[in-house]
Length: 221
Ligand SMILES: [Fe+2]
Ligand SMILES: [Fe+2]
Image (cartoon, rainbow, N blue to C red; front, side):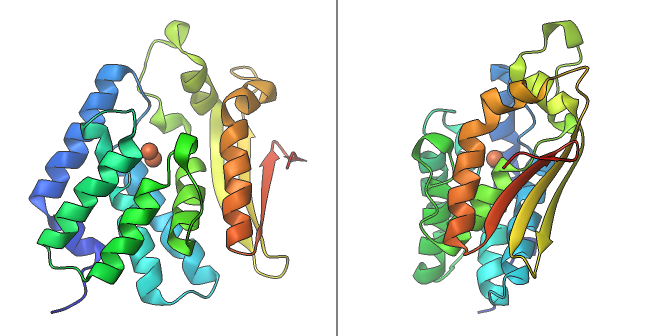
């Protein structure tokens, strides 16, 4: 049997349904976008980071699959969605016939991606944390009424440009943000994202690289 790829996962109608329904739950709860745009970007960033770091193609592909499935647990509840998502992924991937060694890696990564209980326990988990936590951008804000923006809307909406840059020589991964400070002060960003940035630093350490944050040309981490 051929190894399961992200393409197989993306074409799976059951998985599509669960991702849509997980995001519908978050729409109802007033969260930012967690649908195909977020999970596809997370998948791509986790995959390309591991490849740049010299990990083998299959390990990177497991990170890509983990990235794509990581928020599926929101279908159950936002609370503990990492753990419920890991169990859903376990069942889906077992049903697709993926080898247990690979399922274990993906399930562990998904189960360790949410701030409250996150930990970079393996390279795939570390790459998933970095890719997920660095997805900050205006297009994730669904609320069109600026006057009712909460701080999450404000911070995401203020990000006019966001890029993850890896420097091979210095072995640094920099989250480069351009923020419209008319919408949100840099301090607002920190109020929400400090714990995420600390987690990114830990994840980077696990991969033997340094995490840096640059906002509007200022190096902040
Ligand atoms: Fe999540
Ligand atoms: Fe996420």
